[in-house]
Length: 102
Image (spheres, rainbow, N blue to C red):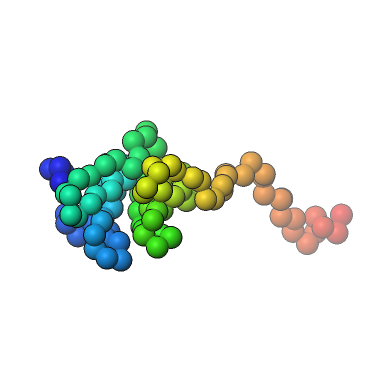
């Protein structure tokens, strides 16, 4: 494992405790306990956080820009699971009783 400045409590282990993931400095990392090798899951200017193992420990889900993504451990591909976007609609003007009457 590379020397990183974070607490061991920050590690999220898979069900078998054979692999772990964590967020550090806005990126997500994956590590194998047996080989002690780590790899970067993300390396972007966006902030990624909240990594968890999903799909029988075959993927790591994480959050980026208020959307959920999943990284496949075997293939290394990342897919976007949600597509929440900030709206541009303006709230409707609330009229008081007198204005509604007119």
